[in-house]
Image 1 (cartoon, helix red, strand yellow):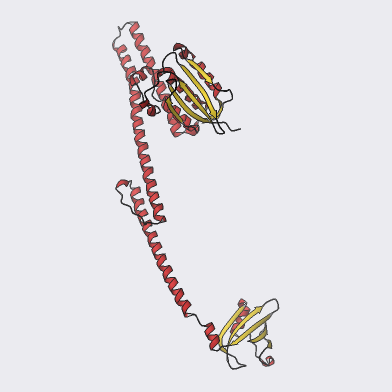
Image 2 (cartoon, helix red, strand yellow):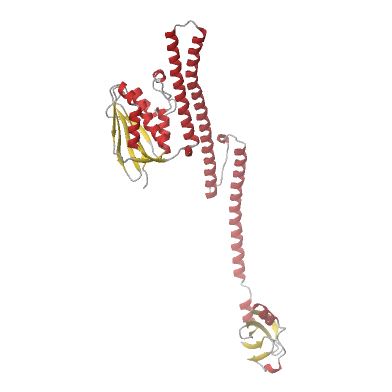
Length: 393
């Protein structure tokens, strides 16, 4: 190997194979120019002016010392073979490239099929077309599986919206029917009074009392509908605070004392005074008041209502609201929380029930993070089991 040392100005101050004192300036040499510019450079098959043979030149510029070190190897068959491209490697590279291109084509083709199908689905979904008749197929890969999930999710959401619309329509029809009954009664009584000016005062007073009772029922119905609507659409509008359940039950006991006395009902509060639940005092009151009103109205006379906190854990208090009244047939249990569901429609309306009390109870429990169920009590009546979140210190 020939070694030559060159200064930045191109002056040669050492060469391993010749008398460097007569060398021309090397600054214009290709490898030197490239080294000065980029830090290193080379030139292939250039005939040496000094040795009159072909060489492979390589130069490296050391900026700190200001020197360029250039090496040269005779460009013979051995070196040429070393520097020549490996045909085997070239063919390997070409083959690998062809395989990668094929795989990429297959992948992008499947990707394109998925995108095309999703575009087709999106257009039809935008037009609100029937999903049941859509024949959509996706490639059997991960993206296809995700696309299937998207379509299924959309179908479930659409079905949920349709169910919600159907339930709202049904609820509207039920509300209209429930409102029609007291309004028709009030209108009928008043028409009878207006059209019969000579009606005896006693009879007239009786009709007015019935109008008043129906107007109270109408007021209660509108109140319950309003509460349910707020829970369904604006649950965050209720103010929250820490509510002492023990004190709340004592307030309910005072509020219904007259009804309890009339039916000779015993009201037992079987829990400690420190049971405190965070939430809406209005909704928590509605839970226990509606259950109490329901028991007073339908369980019978001479019964016992027992409310107790059965247990607690780090998150919940678990309550039992039970009576030993007449209860209901087992086939009615799964429907008791449905809106406007009545076991005996005539008796319920006669007693002033709206058919919404237990629906309010269920929604209010859900809004406080709990669940509720009902079963036949061991004493023969009904037992409502529900849990409410504890106040966090």
